[in-house]
Length: 197
Image (cartoon, rainbow, N blue to C red; front, side, top):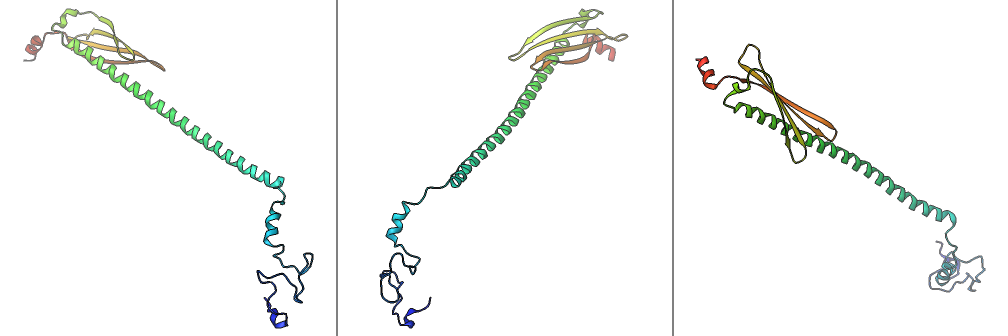
């Protein structure tokens, strides 16, 4: 800033706290073209803030658009979360269904082995005769009912019979079945041991 004191005008007339004066010492009129940029004084500025115009339509639309964009972001996040939860639920449903099917097959295997052990525990296989024999019974579980069918057929030319155990049950997606077969001797254990000596 140029030092006005060198021009003979005295100290800088624009210092804060001093009365606004022109270089000649006369006070400045409010309409004077020589007013500094700080005019009007701070008291008038505070009063002038109350008379400022309200935000225009463009500014209000920008603010509204910002709120709408946040809502769109929230909706997109909810949609992505919903898709993820749906996929996880479907996957968990498949896991539970496969687990239930595995437990049912394990139970069917246990029933078939128990049926075979029941025939092996008989002391006289010859009581069945030489023909074909069959039977059916049911086993009630906590979640399903197993239908057990067995057939005993002699093996031609040998003192053996083939025991076949067939187990059926119903799953939510349809019927299921399991079968197991083995060979049983029609002779007494003592007779079989004497023949092997």
